[in-house]
Image 1 (cartoon, helix red, strand yellow):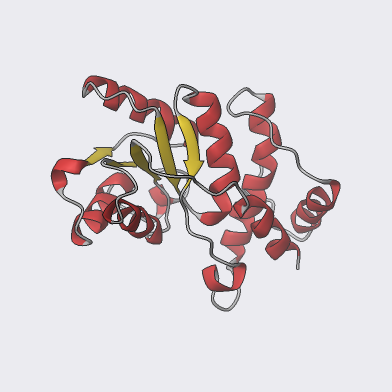
Image 2: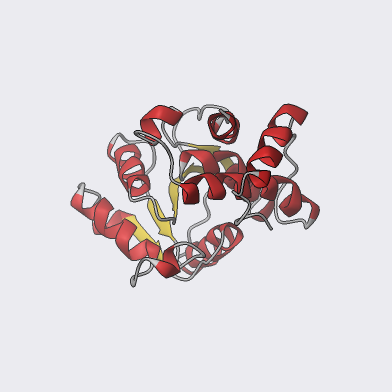
Length: 207
């Protein structure tokens, strides 16, 4: 299945090693992300958790509150203390998740050297590549748990979810060319899978 192949490719990143100075939860429509981030914080993986996100291309159509507000509330409900939680309310894309958070932490006098990114599993590769480009002073890794395609999409993914994955796949090349992220190698097999899905009508999120 082409969608599963792309999901597995986008999810695969090196496993994080050790503790970090902060956890960065990237805003999205997936309410599971702040739960993953809170679990990492509560397990002692970092002393600070930042939720970043205003309203992006998906959430502006489904939510009235900024992503960070919703994510922060979920983190607090899971037990993350407010004094160890920062919210960045304005980012509307992945690059801004990093640059706006960097500005927020600078205002607070915080200069992290390492960070754990938490995001939708199929955003792992692009999030890591973006962080490495936009905030290179930080040593980034990804803390999103290993979740299979079948676990993440009980039943089948929606047409929108497939379109978002296809969009993220082709953004790896387009955004690297624009200087938004570091390059990521895409095999011909994966590229062909993405092209088949575009031809099948799932190209709405391709830029």
